[in-house]
Image (cartoon, rainbow, N blue to C red; front, side, top):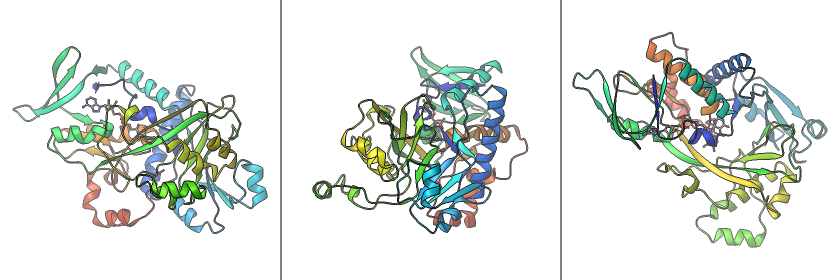
Length: 399
Ligand SMILES: Cc1cc2nc3c(=O)[nH]c(=O)nc-3n(C[C@H](O)[C@H](O)[C@H](O)COP(=O)(O)OP(=O)(O)OC[C@H]3O[C@@H](n4cnc5c(N)ncnc54)[C@H](O)[C@@H]3O)c2cc1C
């Protein structure tokens, strides 16, 4: 087995991951898929003395709505939850939450991992099993004259090499379409840039034991009248005075003794051409840190202090959600003999990596496949009923 990467493995999208995991999805297919991945991660955690720091802390979904039927319906079957209602109970369990939060839904099978450590462990396993790494850029793929093999053109500092392969797996993240194009195949995927911030919470706004907490309500951001006027006159930022979508999320980073926190809000919906240099990606909005802080402060009021006095040590970063419209991955045959893919892992690729890899390997080896295999491959596009259901649903499990 040969793993070809033009960067350090795990240094591109995977280095931007929030490293959160959950089995909370609106559709049983994704619940079963992520449950399998969590099973595999739990087994690996046991076998490795938890070298990748898997912690089942749960997710907290916070809402101001008294009626939570819709939220519970969106939690999907097969996801175990606890519901905490009433101000006093919420205050006792989650003291940082705003006073107007009426209900909290706690997803039990959820938490976080160190994706980098998990990736490192897997690379060691690949090497131990005789696999090799090749540092290089795949710039072309051609069929051999017999049509049974592929010749991959790989370029690196030493020049150009041709790698011959019987089977290939396209796992190029945001560049999966570039690889597919080399085989004259089109994948129904797009890249949507999403941003995060991490900062030193010197004022202790976020309790160190707070699970990943998500605001389930759409909201208006808290601007002064003057700010509102200025934003309304700026076509690029006018959307900030409209109702913003749900999904602001926050969690402490670095354990009980650390003091960093991470905030995210995947509100961008515009797709774009992926850039290799993520740090200078044109869609990285210098206003994002303030926007996400304002959004999160509606749920955790103590964060408002950082809107006025921004944190001095912080990092603002981002990467692409490479996704299909229905926000399900594409795993399995790529539509041309001998070529497979593990693609479109959107905002769930760290949590789904173990099951995705296992599913692709089982497909290639002709092993027994889990019941959801067809739904997560190109096969689903022939199932018009399923596609109609997925397309019409407003909840795609996007976070
Ligand atoms: C801001 C953000 C937050 C996220 N948070 C979470 C989270 O909390 N939980 C979660 O589970 N997931 C999360 N995700 C999603 C997760 O990070 C991705 O789904 C996952 O990292 C995708 O992994 P990948 O291996 O498919 O892609 P990548 O990590 O991008 O790897 C693709 C690799 O292919 C290489 N490559 C591409 N083209 C070529 C070529 N032509 N030749 C050679 N090499 C090539 C690249 O160098 C790269 O190393 C988040 C993503 C983002 C952007």
